[in-house]
Length: 199
Image 1 (cartoon, helix red, strand yellow):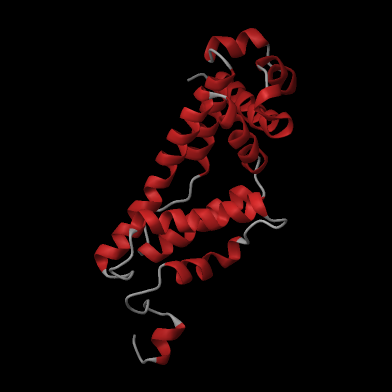
Image 2: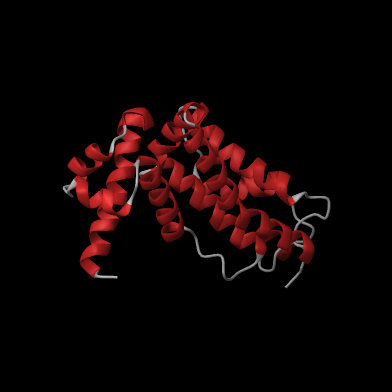
């Protein structure tokens, strides 16, 4: 892809998220994104058919670009990266203001609701897979249900963002993982392992 076209695309997608967070789904228009991004409305319509297509592409693109690296490390380390990432996204990023707007809009617009549910279902799959991996390897307790555990972890972070005055602190990712999942055995190099003489 032409670098200039890709730069314009990224600019438009970022402006779409900012606009959604600022005005909500109901007041969101392609015209307002064009004004915010400085890109002609006709250019936007050449790539996205309507505002839902634009918002969906923005969410999917930045989710892929900003996701944590979970290609290496133990299941516990991967899980920590995911929970920290979700907490950081909901606490500070341009996505933070978009979440309430997306939820509110999904209650009113069937098309947005369908996208929202599909997006969240796909986004949580890596989390479920990492937990299942940890259970299978014996790193997490065998009775842990990966799907329920994933919902519990995400539920806490989203609850703190949407229902309280303070978002969940990413630095406490380890605390919530320990509380919800526990461990079947001490991790190598951990303080608990050291106290027990495990090397």
